[in-house]
Amino acid sequence: MYKLLTHNDLDGVGCGILAKLAFGPDVKVRYNSVASLNREIEFFLENDSTETYLFITDLSPNEENVNRLNEYYEKHGNIQLIDHHKSALHLDDCKWGYVVVEDTLGNLTSATSLFYEYLVSMNFLEANTALSEFVELVRQYDTWEWEKNENQKAHSLNSLFYLVSIDDFEETMIERLSSAEHFDFDAFEKRLLNMEEDKIERYIRRKKREIVQAKVRNHYAGVVYAESYHSELGNELGKEYAHLDYIVILNMGGKRISYRTIHDHVDVSEIAGHYGGGGHQKASGSILTDEAYKHYVLDTFPLESIQEDAKRNRYNVKNSTFGSLYKNRKNDILFIFPKKELWIVEKNNTEVKQSFSNFEAAESFVKRNFEAALVKDDLFVDYLIQEVKKK
Ligand SMILES: [Mn+2]
Image (cartoon, rainbow, N blue to C red; front, side, top):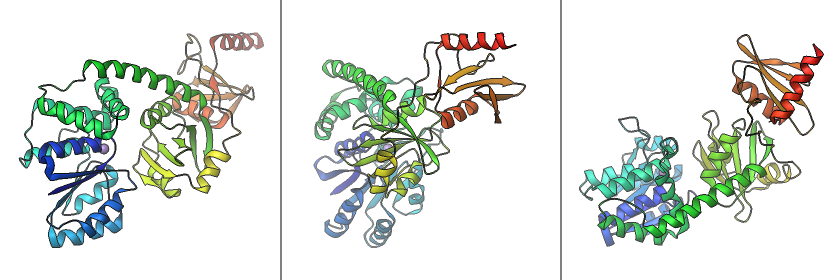
């Protein structure tokens, strides 16, 4: 017998699908949240037969369970962990651990792509075109490579995953991958996915208007309430408000928080850790503790949402040698312009002390400290006329 403990997201379930294709009725698959994995490992160690071969994919056990698994492995063997998260690299030192973040060609890996290679190399599974295509879609979604490759199909696969139950998804995919020559969606799924992607877009647009900015401990956070589409939201809000260190997504019904960042200088697993949670550098989670409630809910409730930059300007644009004009709700006027090699910020016509080596740094300063947004062209033209008159 085989047992697979894996994550309950697309990459984790991709591993489950491969395991069932490889081992059929001889494998038991359990899908877990980050938090429930350790309970499952303890259950396995206490109850399962030592004959059962244990796979763990896309998730890391805590320190205590790493020690228990080490002891178990010395006595019985029969454990293989396969993961691709940087935060799991220490497990590569365990005899039962295999952790690869980047393959030899420099491509980011996913649990599904690593598990696929493993199963094929061990002759548990025969590689074929449809399978390889499916695995590559999962990998591109999980590593977010789909975005730069504009691989909408990878995004659609994840959308489909959340439209149906895990059981339905698993069953449909196993059936398709056992028979099809190429991996594709059927006509009904395609129509459904078009509607779903429109819905996600509208949802994200609304959240862009709801997000508030708060300085929490020593970082700038963007705080938003949402129950769905956390990966998409974390990424889109992070890019739209790149001056923020990270995005906090509050699920009030579930009393849970997701933390996301697009930046390399922030580690959201540390931030989640402060509130008793954990996860990875760019994606993590915690429960809504009293302290987290105070920081993210109570203290931010009176705040007004972040103002969006004017989008259709022709003259007042970013990174312009003529300067870029910003305004906040207190009516402070912020002007960013280049002078010699540097970028200068004027607040209400007075230069601030700091100067900046590039436009982005100057803009980030303006947005972090003054919460100002790029104004529309007409205000910019008025401003320039005033300036000319003064001279
Ligand atoms: Mn993964």
